[in-house]
Structure formats: structure tokens, C-alpha cells
Image 1 (spheres, rainbow, N blue to C red):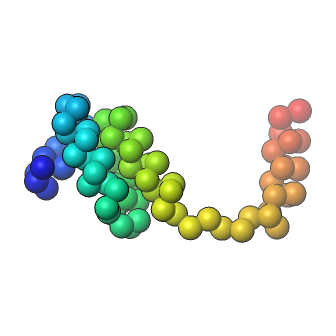
Image 2 (image 1 turned 90 degrees about the vertical axis):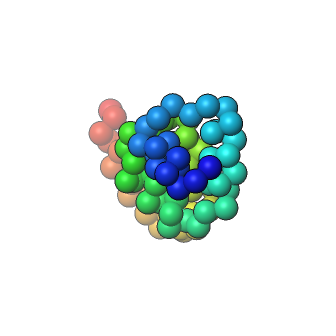
Image 3 (image 1 turned 90 degrees about the horizontal axis):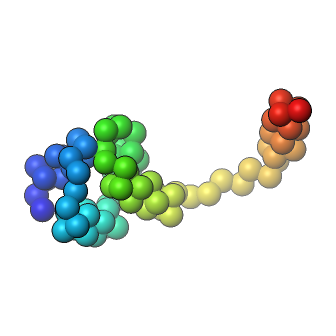
Length: 82
């Protein structure tokens, strides 16, 4: 698969099973910044491929310590749902 085929898939073309397998293998090796670019810059990407990108992005992103914000967030949104 070359960069042109990747662009076609990013643009929304429905992938074949072979496309999916190759795309998944490529995504596994890409750095976080390119995964982020793919996820925000190609809103028309086929949902199957988008899920591959987002899952890998989620696995690679560094988690932040958010405990200090949780009480405020829970309190605010709990009051909105009542």
C-alpha cells in the first residue's frame, strides 16, 4: 500500500479486508502525532478505519493525573443531570 492509497482510505473509501489488514499494520507503527493528525483531519474516514486510528491513539497517549479535578467535575455534572 502506497501513500496515495492511504490518502484514498483516509478520504473515506470503504476498505477491503486486505486494505484493513495493511492499514492496521501501518497504524501500529505510526507515531502519536500522525495518529492525532489522521483522527482530526479526516472526518470522512470510514468508521472501521477511524476506530483503528482512535484505538491506537488511545493506547499511545500519555495519561494525565486528573484526580484533583474530579470532585469539581462530578459535582458540576451531577447537578446538571438532576
